[in-house]
Amino acid sequence: MDSLHAVGFYASAGVSLLGGLGVALLQRRDSRGAALAATAIGVAGIYLSLSAGFAALIALICLLACAFVIAGPAHRSLAPAMSPLWRQLGAISAALLFALLAFSAFKGDFVKATFYGGAFDTAALGRLLFGHDAVAVVAVGVLALVAIAGSSAAWHLRERPPR
Amino acid sequence: MTVGLVSVLFVGAALIAAGALAAVWRRDVTAAVAGLPLMFAGAGVAFVGVARFAAAGLHELVGQEMAILLAIASLALVTLGLGLAGRESPR
Image (cartoon, rainbow over the protein chains, first blue to last red):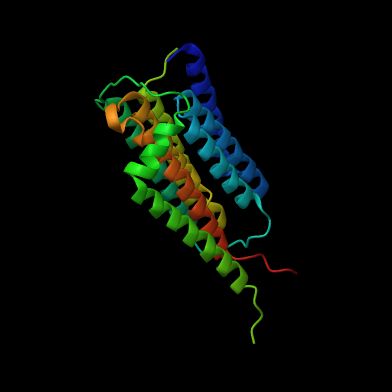
């Protein structure tokens, strides 16, 4: 990997991590949406610098759509009765999770291999997606269909006035 | 300046932890849902890193494929979560 790709990787990683912290800590919906959009751009940049151009395009579209949905003012706020102690324990658990994953990344003994694919290898990815692993693609497609149909139905059913 | 698998996994771990923090720290459930795409994106970064630095032969692009499927699944789950939460009632 040359220096240009390395600079792109580290800049994109910084943008995505700042956006991730913004999603976790910002208060307003539109600010969280903007932070998630920044994460989307950063993650797409990471994918691009790692020679995964098509995955970058799909991730950019999907994460920007997530940001648009999250920033929207229409959905209802649901606040469960959870004590601050449990939230603080959860935050400590997230920090421990990061420490565990980072430790395993540093101490792991990984195989090294040379990458021969292109920067935007859509033909090989298409063969993989629709030939070798077609069942997984169908499963994710069904999940997306059920999720969108279910959320649309729930969205409209809650608004129907009682008879 | 160079990039290796450890750097990529470190960034993926940080994204997953940020998503977990968003999911547990937010009081509002619909705000906590925003942590899901972060965690899925972190897993996707790790998969793409493994595909770039530690996979060869027929399975060279499987990590990229997993990242694509994870991105689509995260969008579906966020849509489902916010749809189930419902619309803000007019006042």
